[in-house]
Image 1 (tube, rainbow, N blue to C red):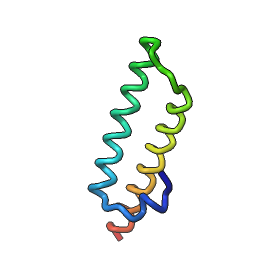
Image 2 (cartoon, rainbow, N blue to C red):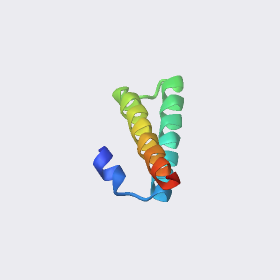
Image 3 (cartoon, one colour):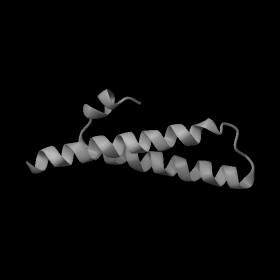
Image 4 (cartoon, one colour):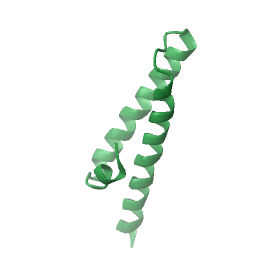
Length: 66
């Protein structure tokens, strides 16, 4: 997921993406705790995607406030 793709989405869509990413991160943490995790690199990818979504969301709210 790139920042360009995220810039095209509305704030509501970004919040939906953010909630689904956080759910996936929770599931990955659960899998890691139980020893069922297959792809450990997915943690890093999810964390970065969450940060990217939050950055774009904060930028959109900052521009809307001005």
